[in-house]
Amino acid sequence: MNTQRIPLAGVIGQPINQSKSPQLHGHWLKRYGINGHYIPMEVSSVDLPHVLNNLPKMGFRGINVTIPHKEAVLDMADVISDRAALIGAANTLTFQSDGKLHADNTDGYGFTANLKQEAPDWAPKSGPALVLGAGGAARAIVAALLHEKVPEIFLSNRTRARADALKAHFGGKITVVDWTQAASHLDEIGTLVNTTALGMSGKEELKLNLERLTPKTLVTDIVYTPLVTPLLAAARVIGCPTVDGLGMLLHQATPGFERWFGQVPKVDAELRRALLT
Image (cartoon, rainbow, N blue to C red):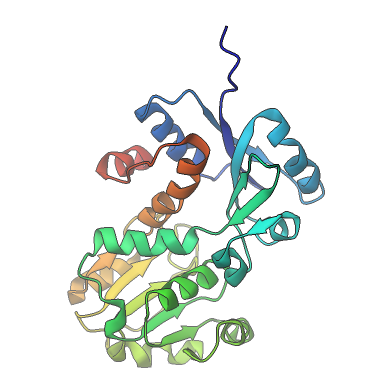
């Protein structure tokens, strides 16, 4: 009789119905013939400590974390990766064999891995980047861009105070730009990143005058519904290389899957098709 426990992982948040992570990890489990499960779980902030304490007892090897728990889980972790500490949030938790809870943030890794796969000629050191937004995703992306040696980051957010807070956190290579002045820097940059929900299906339009945008600038949007946002469509008309946001979601999942299920998963066209159907 085989008494080995079936490996379990999952994603926690509130709400959780919108998460594509079960579909993503489920595809990999089937592809690699792994007898495991990945389970979505709606967890309130009140129940979070109790849930994290009990999941490993039930056979869970780790979980992904989404809104609103990404910051709170750091206070409950025993070991925090450097990038999670720098960003101030975690999206990937691993229940280690020694009983300790390890917290990591793979959002920035997913962002840069996506760009390197879809735009192999991207040269982050070649010029400044303009990052739109100052929320949790922006924190991870700013950290990733600095790690890739982008020489300067223009940061613009509708509420300037949030952008100022990110500058205070990350330091001198960040220049805060008023939201109404962001377009004036488009002819200086090598990378343009939208980290806001503007342009997403059902959300407000991203109103950014692209007259000064040049074909040398790589344009990417973390939004993936629609896959080609109005920003990406307009950038393509100008001749810019563009990268959609779906790949960031796919790549950020790979470190967790490897840790929990012991298999390095591939991000490829087959996976993209599976997530888009």
